[in-house]
Image 1 (cartoon, helix red, strand yellow):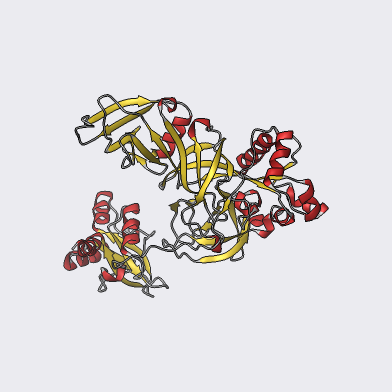
Image 2 (cartoon, rainbow, N blue to C red):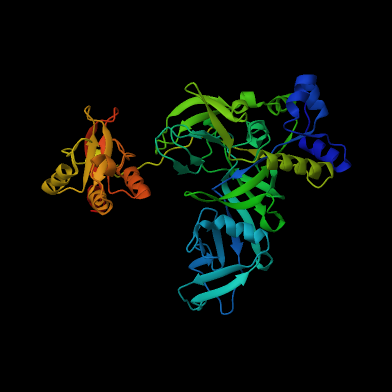
Amino acid sequence: MVKTIAEINEKIRKGDAVVVRADEMPEIVAEKGAEKAAKEVDVVTTGTYGAMCSSGAFLNFGHSNPPIKMQRVWLNEVEAYAGLAAVDCYIGATELSQDRGFEYGGSHVIEDLIARKEIKVRATAYPTDCYPKRRLETTVTLDDLNQAYLYNPRNNYQRYVSAVNLSDRKIRTYMGTLLPNAGNINFAGTGHISPLNNDPEYRTIGFGTKIFLGGAQGRIVGEGTQHSPQTQLGTIAVKGELRDMSTDYVRGGTLPEYGTSLFVGIGIPIPILNDELARSTAVTNDEIESSLTDYGVPRIDRPVLRKVRYSELITGKVELNGDKVKAAPLSSFKIAYDIMDELKKWIEEGEFTLANGVESLPGKREVKAMKVRDRTYHVSDGMTRKVHTASEKDSLKKVSELMVEKGVDQIPIVNGEGKVVGIVTSFDFTKALSQGKRKLSEVMTRNVITSKSTDTIDETSRKLEKHGYNATPVVDDEGKIKGIITVSDINRVYGRLSK
């Protein structure tokens, strides 16, 4: 049994199309079979809503008098890319405000534009004969612009990894806050109602497909960046008119201590042209897996701990090493259901027809890692291997004399097996004198930030900066002391990189 998009569009125009949501399709196919379901159902609506960092908007301001060729431009003190034409720019969702940091970024500018708020525009330029103006300051609203459209290079991952943190410290990531020692799991995507999961072979999803985008009708304009269907990480690039969008479905947001992102709502209608599409839209959360990945390892090739089904993720508890760990979505299922309902209403009322002549997305792509030609430096390249240590039982006097004799500011404290149990610094001794403390155990820091010799200099530098420390003991897999690396050691390594 085969239908065409033209036949379905004719039914939409007559008000006869049968439209169901993606969550309803599994039961329909289970009850009636794929062949009968394909005869009865014309369109399945899908939906997802979540942080989509690879998003932004193209804007055209029109010419000033005298005219200016914008070289740099800021919108509410968020810098936009102006290397296009005289008065065009692209505002990226993750660009941060110069004066408000993580609190406000490009994503918030886009939301404020959609909300018809005034936006402060500031621009600088080099003068030319045809563009003599050097500086510009004004305010605009969305309705003042000639063109304003959302253009997102990478949205709507087909599936995404789930994140956990096995390290002993809390970390802030694009997957949200991850507590130490597997304290929580965060996951993204909306599982069996997510668009690309309902047509995983892209039979109806491709260049030119009409979609629900941010509360407006938009289009898929190509494969998204990092499109990797062979690893079930397909993506799409999308475009839509900003003026028609709603802040119900496009919102600026901040991921704590990571940065800003744009929360975008996308819905794709899947035309049921045959029984194969009926089967694929009957996918369940039991059939969709995510890779549970250790984000405590700050590398691209993070360890995958296990595969976990969405049916387990959405229960809020995931088993890991015999324990039940709390799991929470970064995507909004409620708004995703609202999107499916809204798209269904548009189709049933004849306001939305399906696109014809779609060119499918590529099905054979696999994302590549960046080819880095310069050397990656590790802790082993800068650490001091001959490290002076002390025991917790040593006196303050003995340890202070050791510091003076060896000319060091930090002494790791180790137990009888050589394992690091603490660290004491010259500043700790200053505090001890002012507070009248007499024992090393009262002065030393027990929550030690340690490193491995195989850690990169970049990740170790970030660790020290984040915790405000000047040094970190270097330990082996058993926690035994192998050396120490200080901020000065790291700066020497960076000095080599700059030569």
